[in-house]
Image (cartoon, one colour):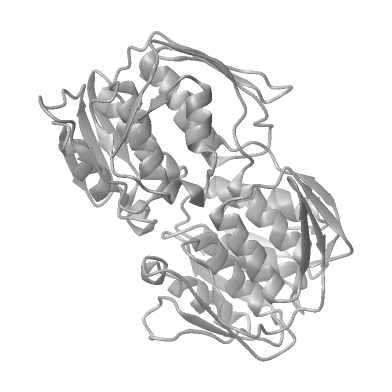
Length: 426
């Protein structure tokens, strides 16, 4: 078992890992570009390695030198084997559209058991309107998926995106390589800021997407050109360390987050409403979080920042009063059923928890039962592991966590960075 114990206060400088979202997107755009690209400060994690391997299997050449990835595009071709996307939903969904751009043949995409439970049906339906033959092997809108190459014809399509904005990003990323351009009408979109990130990357590589809010997108068949792209620090990863200092007290300077749109920058406003003091330097993107360690509950809509659910729920268990989290129906389709998983684990600590299809409520602060510390499970979910580790640290080891390597999916250095800030792991 793993137990975590925070020091009396947390202070210092902290540099989060590179953004997983931007690394995925930059890799795809670079692989589809004309000319060589350099991706600087690229994240090396289980998920981003899956995207690199998938793109290589489709013909892209990639050379990693430390945190820099050199991408030399090649002719896109059908792979010689099944493309296994591991547990990465981003890889799977992006590669479905990319595979349609191969010069012929078929690509088969699959992944772990949980990935094969994550839906892609709306993406397949929309691609069919754009001339792509992409089908679920079981006919149920779930992976494995078979994609016929030969090109993306383009045209006009509609897309339901209430399950995931990754459907939108997948089509947009491939659209500059379509034959006739793409007009995409989107309904019910969640996680909108991730689409903003996609458009930033597309423009950095020379595409010219146009938009009408989040309802309509237009992409001309301009292709991409090689570029140098610097990946910013990851707000998603930083949210755990910001949450730690908010919960136990202290002052933390977070460096390197940059100014590009990131969904989980919403953590700044959430922490302020829970009682921490937050300062953002607009010129550098550096953030300072200062706290006395006294948190209060509140109501938070995470429709556009669903990955914050685990850490906000964990902080709610430490806060005075009730924390209500809404807009989270789509988080049931992540690496785990996150509302159910967090409710189950927080209940082990004596928390009063209520949850339904689109909400989770936690009454804090928790008082773990006497005796041996309860053993919490991450349900195979990297974000739940990291949130529960922060919770255990704030409780000074009165909660244990079953060993897991799930955090490597997005943040391989998570444990080392905790130790750097004085957290004992034993």
